[in-house]
Each structure stands twice: as C-alpha cells, then as structure tokens.
Amino acid sequence: MSIRSILSSLERLLQLHQSLLELSFQKTELLKKGDITTLQKLLKTEQKHIQAVDTMEKKRLDSTKVWSETNQMVSDDVTVTTILEALPDGEERNQLESLTTKLAETLVQLKAQEGLNQQLTNQSLQFVQMNLDMIAPSIKQMNYGNIKNQNDPQSKRSVFDSKA
Image (cartoon, rainbow, N blue to C red; front, side, top):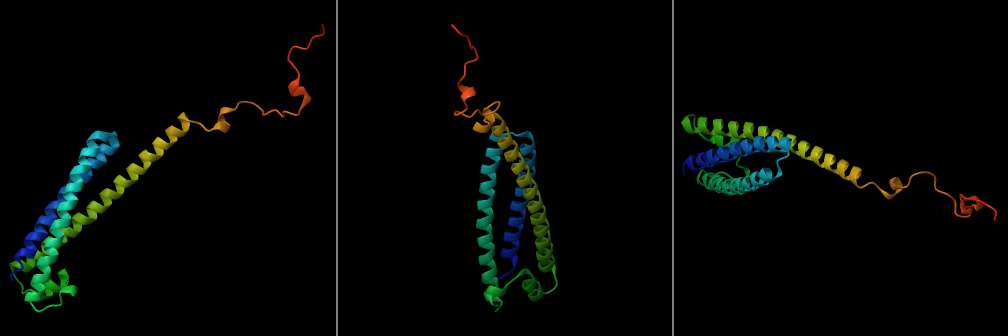
C-alpha cells in the first residue's frame, strides 16, 4: 500500500485545523464585541469541524495501521518519525514531512488562540458576576446605620416624649 492515503488524510486534517484556526480568530472578535447570538452560531459550526476532525483522524489511524502492516511494522509503535525512516528519499517523504510540520504549526497556533479565547471568556464571566453582585447586594449591605439592641430601654422610648 502506498503512503498516498496517509498523505491525503493529513492534507484534509491540515485543512480542517486551518479552518478551525480561522473560526477561533472569529470567535476572539465576537468575544471582544460581546455578540452572543453570532458566537452561538459560530460554536455550532466549530462543533461540526471538530466532528469532522475526529472522523478524519480515525481514517488516518486506519490508513497508518494498514500501511504499517503492509510494511511489516508493529502497528502500535508507528509514528511519523518511524514512517519517515522507512520511506526512501523522494516526493512522498518530503510531502509527509512538510504536511506534519504544517499541521504541528497550525495546532500550536490553534492552542494559543483558544487559550486567548478562554481568557476572554473568563474575564467576561467575571464582569457579569461583578455586575450581578452590584445589582443584587447581600442582606447585610441592605441595612443602614447601627443595629440597636432590643433589650435596651432607650430603644423603646418614643421620639416624642411629653406629659399630659
């Protein structure tokens, strides 16, 4: 079996991850603007991309397993490095090396961008919580002045003290 099926699945994975990176940049902008409705639509699209990545990753794993069995390699220990070592110098080897490098770079960028999005989301949640705390203060903050002791005889006296 040729390495072509592994290369095609890696190419598709790269495209999907680059698309996820673009969605992540859009998500950052929507978080900055506070546009929740558009953000919800974007999250649905992102979820579909993630499902496609899962499906493509399974295909890549299957292709790698078939390739390793065809080339008499232990299928559990097959990595890109072992495949590169087994491949002769040529176009397929260069393509595999290039695709895996681009995919790794894209994944690093995606992780960094999603980290930023997580920080923005946490800050937004903190802002909302602060506003809720300001709107609905606790009972202790509702009482003004000193609390009077009910056993104190002066607290039972009327403000208007007169003799009839």
